[in-house]
Image (cartoon, rainbow, N blue to C red; front, top):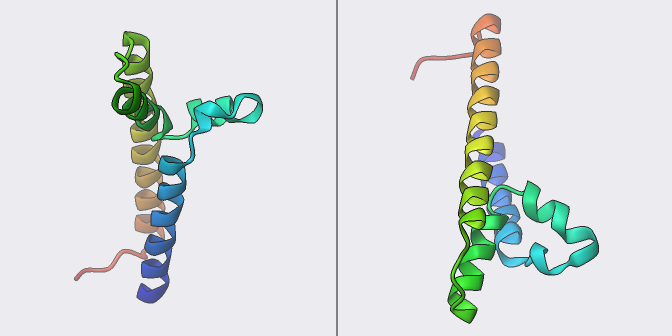
Length: 96
């Protein structure tokens, strides 16, 4: 089971790299919904825009980055709470 979890962690790093490296904001027809929905894309887009062109990031972009992060943090904490509650009820949690 531990090897499977380690493989999943390695695979998730490649998925995160995909989110960081693909400029979803430049793909106009299908990329814009993904750009706003993915957890790290707005922050990376703002960073890429600032570093490459020297452009100043608007307040709307900063608000988008923080709200996107807050939404994903709340969703992750809720999912973790539900999984921990279910594991507690089923008795799957062990002591190490």
